[in-house]
Image 1: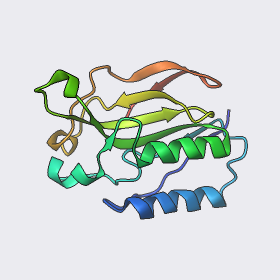
Image 2 (image 1 turned 90 degrees about the horizontal axis):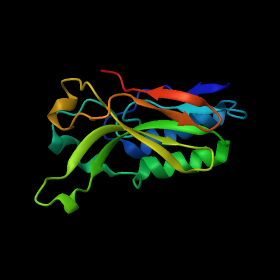
Image 3 (image 1 turned 120 degrees about the vertical axis):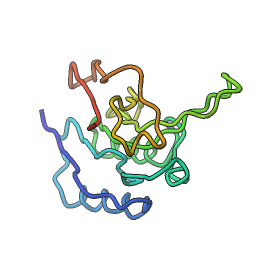
Image 4 (image 1 turned 30 degrees about the horizontal axis):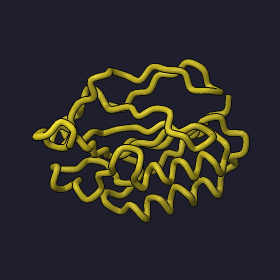
Length: 156
């Protein structure tokens, strides 16, 4: 199994630059034959927001923001599974009058560019507690085609 960890220090709030940096690192690497590509927590928004107001411009609707678009495109380009962290905004209008929900999440996309899992961080770090809810499922456990049984968590 070939796993690539695209580790870089995303700049807080500089989404376009962070996207470009990720693409630049991948273009210099040898991603052919990857089974799984893993990116950091809040990979493109950056990490360590002080409040909901501070992170609000970077929140993405589940599976439809810039991170999921990049993930689907990149998974298809390199024919690999991909895990990437993003700040998730969940529309709860069906549960009116509930407020929107926000999570520190990780999206899992398969080699066909399809979302196969969306993990929400459990055991929040104190800076996450200022804006995010804790996921209620615990660590992700499931099968990822081509990888087998997997577990996913985000650092506390």
